[in-house]
Image 1: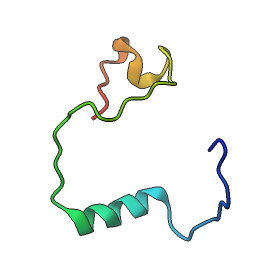
Image 2: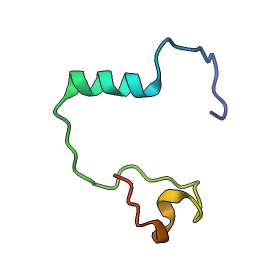
Image 3: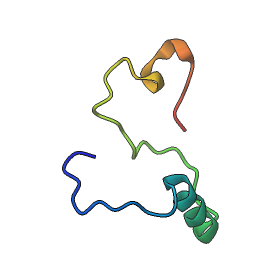
Image 4: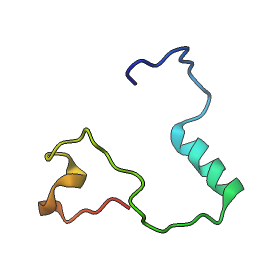
Length: 57
C-alpha cells in the first residue's frame, strides 16, 4: 500500500480477520448503497467491464 508505515506481518489473513469481524458483528446490513467506489481502476478492471456481466456486490 502506498505510503504505508510501521507495517508488520500478522499471523492471520485479511479474509480471516473479516470472517471473525462478521461473526462478531452479524447480522450486517447487506443493502447496496454505493458507499464503496473505486476511483483508480479505470475502464479495464474486471468489475468495470460490461462484457463480463459482473457486478461487484
